[in-house]
Length: 175
Image (cartoon, rainbow, N blue to C red; front, side):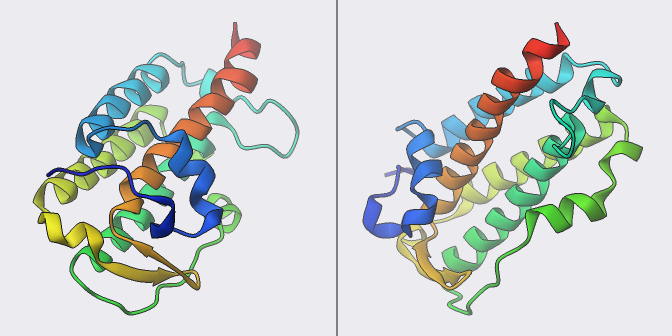
């Protein structure tokens, strides 16, 4: 059966933009393709470029990459919990507080990219190991119910969203 895109009844409307931003198709193959895309984009930046912010108060490219790692870890953890049938409600997280505490500016871009690659590889491994029935298991996160199947697609859409912002607001200024 494989990992397929969830239906709208499987997730709260707040996640609809991320799920919509994820392509249709086998989730594991899409996660692998996006791994390559992110690696190429961030691997092509210099250390100096990675500290660029397109406006005061906005995240640098390093901040964004670390945010992708943090969010992906949290979504993967939710996927594991729900996929294993654990219905214990999970709290949300404050992405801005995480970014402020992370201090991405003092980490090397190559280290941040390696970290994100490992995080994505762990999600891919989890997705490959979950049995088909696990994708239908439901859990509660941030007060909202969703299925395990949603979480890899939320990761895909979340990353796609930030890649679009990078291409629109960051990369043109770096040329």
